[in-house]
Length: 418
Image 1 (spheres, rainbow, N blue to C red):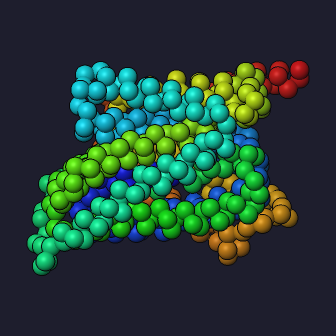
Image 2 (spheres, one colour):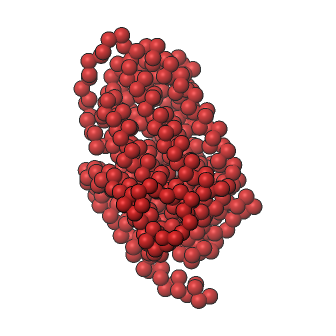
Image 3 (tube, rainbow, N blue to C red):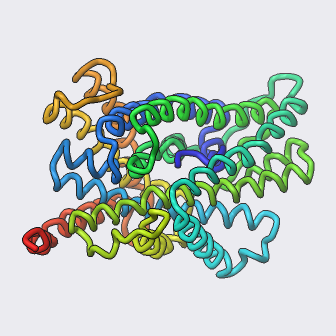
């Protein structure tokens, strides 16, 4: 749900260079991923219920904010879930351009979303088992890349080449996206064995593993002296070719990029499709969205989400990332607020894991993500999306969520009476 290998990091190198990229990838987990992981570990161990962050934000801050949490997550997912088909199509186009030419790329992206929906109808365990397998398969080529890069490293220090498109802030936003998604695991808490023990361990080891799989391949390629300007979205195969990788390795990296995109899409489909189901349980949506099949999967919610995710397939990678970081980042800040709110509202709630430092610690871990999100707001002001910028579009979508909540109130009261 957080990482499908180092795919998606190429834009960070292109925008910040090797040293800047490694600095960003070291700082972002400390300021963004680790605080979020600690927060999720406490909240999921204290409130191990299906619906995850919707449930604990509602308990910590109230129903209005719980609804806004889900709204921001679902609207953000429209942009997030279009990123993975876009990456899949980019990698497919590297060795089969005819398959993605013209409008065929959109058709391939839509087919991938449909395949993930069908896969998720098999249930959470099938998705989890396949994610582990896919993760191992896609990381193997990067171990080979590191070996090739170290074998072709520059004998002397190469002169630093100037970047043509310096965008350090843009690189930070891409890194935030690459380290985002820890909270998504919370929505399936009701389907996880021993969540009070599983989640804290999963958060700790995942932060370490994701950081290592991001930094080590880039550091190895940096040692070859390859011009950072040669990096581009979906370009790991080109990087491998440039440092002397074989045709087999180039093909494996391309295939791995497709596997990574498909695997991330599949895992996130499992997470996000639970949100319409729990909203239906609370009468925010028609009851049909809570229907489940024999595997326990909310199949109506899965199908509805898949349809909406196909709407943003034509946006560029950077536009998708900045909108996703803004909207999903706001939902994550609500979760940090709920961490504090639940400490106040339910001080005696059993918490198998607690964020260290008492109330001060609970407040403090939310500050670094807040600072990073403020940087994201600045970057959104200069990213055009049609006739407006990304910040204006994000603000409009946030306002729509507030409006829908109050418009749906009469229907919720009638449903409660029935």
